[in-house]
Amino acid sequence: MLSRTADHLYWMARYTERAENLARLLDVSYQMSLVPQSVASRNENWRAILALNSLEADFAETNREVNVESVLRFMVSDPANPSSIFNCLRAARENAHAVRGTMTAEMWESVNATWIELRQQNFEHILARGISEFFDWVKLRSAVTRGVTFGTMLKDDALHFIRLGGLLERGDNTARILDMQYHILRQNDDEGASDFYRWGALLRSVSAFQVYRKVYRDAITPGRVAELLILREDLPRSLHACADGIVRMLQLVANKASAETVRQAGVLHARLHFARIEDVLAGGLHEYLTDFMDRIFELGDGVSRDFLVPG
Image 1 (tube, rainbow, N blue to C red):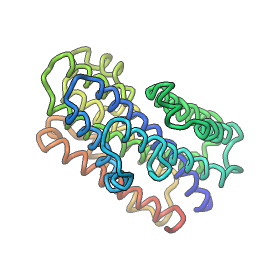
Image 2 (cartoon, rainbow, N blue to C red):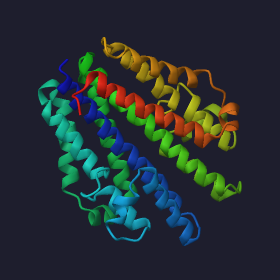
Image 3 (cartoon, helix red, strand yellow):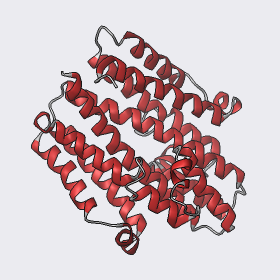
């Protein structure tokens, strides 16, 4: 496959997955903001979202105060924010358009229809309809595109690069969501009704609430939430599942230049496969997740270096 074609497919998948995961993060943060708390505490949580995405400086240039509406506007529809949902879905569509002939008609129509519908909405319209409804729409459109992709694309290198991009982005974002929310929730851990609601919202943000109930059949505890989202290989959005998929995709597209990247992916997968949650928590969850995100970043660099168009 031409490196330029692989590049567009890889980034189309990453931007689509990024938009979905941003919708998940913002939705759980919005739901948590409805729980009784001080204004300062609520705004600090929204400031944490900006820090999580390294957007403090970009947001500061808007000259807005950090609060629920201003951060939502910035993260959802601000064209000046390169990481907004608006810009992620626009970039996904642009990358898809560049290699339209490589994908199936159904896949292109799904990506294009998502962008056309989004372009017709402004932030006021989104607020009027309900911000959570909008986040559900983003997640649904991502799921539709993913389903059409897996259901119609030939299982060749094009599909492998799409899956590789999506898995790298998903693993990174699951780690980011867990790192931020775990820290906030542990600070406010009072084992009350409010606390249960917060942990439940975190699990729902990665579509894992019902799975948690099925696996553990018990009260929601921080350690089990961390174990589920990090080590359970059978949970699609867990770090372990993402690492497993990344290794398999890299092995399928491997070339003479990619041996080191494949090795690094294997090391990351082994660390997750043989880890115990007691050891992860004893060493510090934040440190573990930060190391995971660093390794995912390095893998992304390796993929770009070994397969894609030089920067």
